[in-house]
Amino acid sequence: MIPRIHNRGKRTIGLLAYLYGPGKYEEHTDPHLVASWDDNAPDPGRDPQATLKQLQRLLDQPVQNAEEDSRPAQHVWHLSVRNAPTDRILTDEEWADVARRMVAAAGIDDPDQGAGCRWAAVRHADDHIHIIATLVREDGYKPDLDNDAQRVQDEARLLEAELGLRRLNAGDRTAAQRPTSAERHKAEREHRERTPREELRETVRRAVAGASSDTEFFSRLASSGLLVRKRVAPSGDLLGYTVALPDDRNKDGDPVFYSGSKLAPDLSLPRIRERWSGMPNGAGTDDGTRLVAEPGMSRPASARRRAAGAVWQAVLVIDQGEDGAVAAHIAAAGEVLDALSKTSAAHTRRELREAAAAFERASRSHVRAVRHHDRALRQAARDLSHGGPALGRGEDGATTAMVIDMLFFLVTAAALWHARKGHAQQAAAAQQAAEYLQAAYSSAAERPLGALHERGRHLSLPVRRRHEAVVRQALPDLAEQLLAEPGWPALAATLAEAEAAGHQPGPLLAAAASRRELGTADSVSDVLVWRLRRMADLPADPAKATASAGGTAPRSAAVRPAAERPSRRSPGL
Image (tube, rainbow, N blue to C red):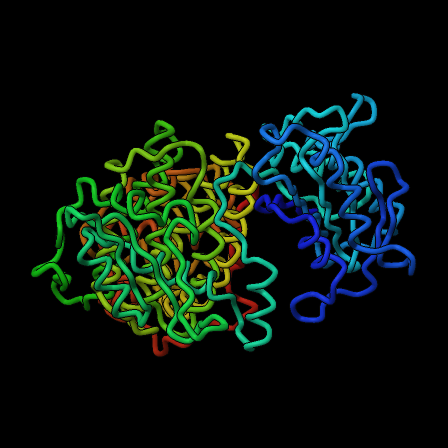
């Protein structure tokens, strides 16, 4: 149940005409009254003798009786209450009770408290009602509407439980503004998958990811095809910006512009500029636009490899850091997800975009981010953006799987942190992002893990037994589980590569397992493979690795059958 308090107005008759009318898109059906301040108000919807003017005069009577200098300039209060599409259809009597409880919670009218304001609840659809009220009480005083929005939200949570409706998580007013009904209807009429507000929010979010200056940010906006207007002070200082889609026009044919703050609270120019703090323009790039690739590695793969390391360090901060630093890392994680999604290969792009969109809600809370703590993650987002699009195969694809694996743990850690803080909406959003990352990981990891599995199966018997002993000695509590998992051959192959590269497998394995808990992993071997390959600086793509010591190179790097692949882990919140 979503209650929404709309902007106050001056014309009672104007709002009544809309509520009882056909709607902007002929969407209103059978408009009628379900409740009112005295349960005796005329209903122009079902009573042929009643008129809108009669109802308006009765609603406005306390306002007209008040002294002229004490009348509110905006005296019309408007609340809509909407149920979820999956909720059952409430009866008129149930909606009437909802209306009475909402006006009491808001401070509009409570019969137990004496004189209240006049109000009426109109239903013109199955899933919602509108409540109109006038803001002078019967005794001539004004109602106390302080914090009315939060009070009606709290009442909605109680009503959901009592009426058996979908239970929504309590909000904290840090969410981005939802599209209005008019915006949704317009998008449907124009056959858009999303409203312009939602499309603009994603595009601006991606432009911010890893940017380090106003110039770079606005250059990215222009490159994305948006129409951009800058708000400039007489002094020449840049104060703000608005953006529009070229094909989103109003009835006069003009572009419909949105300010950054109307897209999301953290997309206003002042809030965006907070991210530039301590972020040198062009840091980590050779000319401010090009990422320097590591030897023998493509730029996208280099960016992903570096991002995996930054993400893993961020997981440790979220587990142990101060709140301001944690909030900064969670916000910057959203930038990494945005940058990764816009440079990903086709087979992971959709899931990564969905993960980034879901995590957007988790990136904001009332815990203020101390931005300089997030430099490494913001640099990772910058490197991903400047590294360019990745191929879905070879080192590009394997490092994509590696960074998604690390991001899964980061998002899971963020969900747990939000849950501990009581941030219900943010915790749910992070959980949803983790589910999308799980799907993206499955696509990205299939080929490299399949090749590692095949390589592990061809290790010589003495090598296999040696690494089984390593596992039993380094991880005695996990050894039997690891050796029984379908992913064990891939882990054995990775241990063999690490040994061939000069590492001691036992201490390396113990260090990888101790970095963070493994209880949320369905496939512990999967998790350890990527941790080991990152820590030992092994190629993410096994095809680039040399033949394992003591073994023979596999005849085929074919992906193993689906039944042999390890299942992916779940967050376990």
